[in-house]
View 1 (cartoon, rainbow, N blue to C red):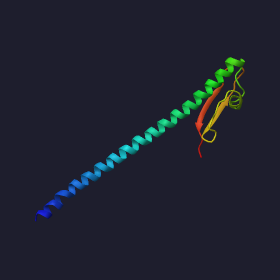
View 2 (cartoon, rainbow, N blue to C red):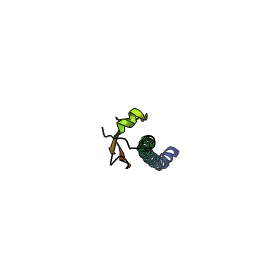
View 3 (tube, rainbow, N blue to C red):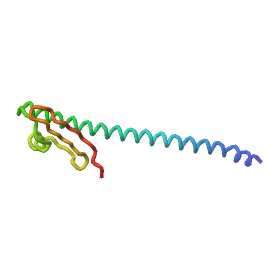
Length: 107
């Protein structure tokens, strides 16, 4: 008779344990997902900031903004992972800062 009482009392404990485990697993996955999204946003921002630094350096040395990012890659050692990022570079004029936008390439 003692065995049957233990089985009945252990079933609710097992259910509570499984529910808690599932809740913790969902929480951990949500945190990891948020961290990955934040990391990707930071990487995009870093690429954009590197391009802006190279553009400003070019303007400081040469007195004009470059025609495109390719010029910065050739002459200012700028490295962009083209398989991962798309760079939109819109030159307005020789003495106006170009519009620069970086997005993640969709595969």
